[in-house]
Length: 96
Image (tube, rainbow, N blue to C red; front, top):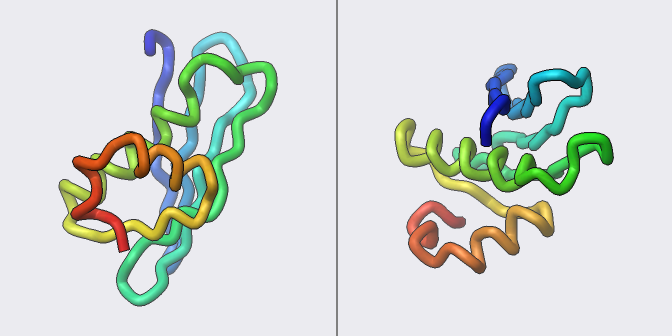
C-alpha cells in the first residue's frame, strides 16, 4: 500500500508492529509477547480513520516476514491473525 510504513518496536519479551499511513497521526498496531521461544500475537488494533485499507493485513505480513527472516514461531492468539493463518496455509510451518 502506498504511503504505508511498518515499524518494529521491541522490548525484552514483548513488542509491537506499528503501521503509519502518510497524512494521518493514527497508528495501527499488532502486539506480541514472547512465550516459550515463540511470539504470541495478542492483538491487532486499527483505528477507524485508517481502517479498510489493508493495514491489519500488512501488520501480519510484517510479523510473518520477520518470523521467516529471524527463525521464530508464531502463536496466533489474536482472532485476526488466526484467520490470516487459516487463509495462508503456506504459513503453517511458522505456527505453534
